[in-house]
Image (cartoon, rainbow, N blue to C red; front, side, top):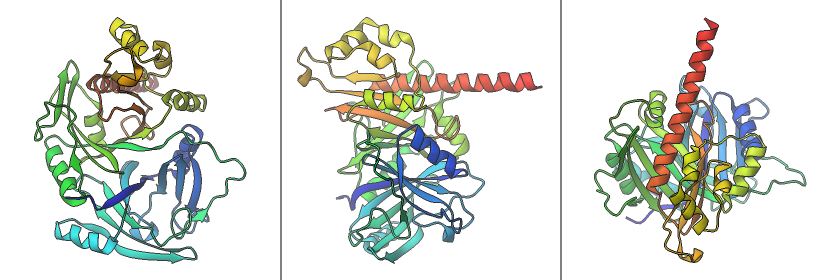
Length: 386
């Protein structure tokens, strides 16, 4: 089926302290607010922020759907969450009818809002996974910088230079055994296509990674102009891992992290670190391994450049000619809300479309080490307080 989605519009947060999350996105990750509603206190705070081609909307949690525009409210008792990936479409009423015929639940029926700049039609569809929902927009008759009922926030003469180009992928944490069912739902309802992560991947089982302290099943899908979606579930193993910890708070699954494409990961990471952002560390042996050093230097890079920020490299190194080699660079920021929750990833691709197994293993272990160290610190503080 051809995708009925035109492009990914923005990703929405619902949080208990919108001001804190907005401050972190602005100061640490160099987003800037450009549109808002509710700043007068008459409705819940909703703020749209931008970094280059990436737009996030941060919503203050509210009691009722009627108080919140362009989304459906999660319960106040639920954890802070990233729960809505919004898309632009051509015909909201037609697509919403088709989705209902497929058995989908509409959280908000097709609605049209107007202001002096035109009109926008939207609906909100519940995903098959956890608290995830998708707002579908038709903005073809609207000529302002965001959406009706949002006021433009003037940035003065200084608008930050964005270092993010677009949303590369969204990763969803899934309960064990549900990934194939979730993937088929997105294929059937939105026209996503299965994206093999390995030539030997079993379409029904996905790409499995097993080893010491790691058991992970991944499945992926993509669609032109929408980026990739990655479904992650843990395999039975000893010890905690970031997928299972995430599912302790999002019982039925949800959005675990978002990968932001940057044309220069070193420049982006450096500027964010200078503003207080923290990225997960890698063991020194990752960068001192002779084979990894050869791989890094073969691409015209230096191990010290990567180790400074904990950046990982995965390549198809084939020879001394740099233009013949495809590679990707990745680094994870520390969780944005709490230690077990949503986080951002920076990713730079040089003609590489997938996700390298070596990077997946290293990122998994780095996050596990971070979670373990955080838990140990909290336990020590708790024991000292007794």
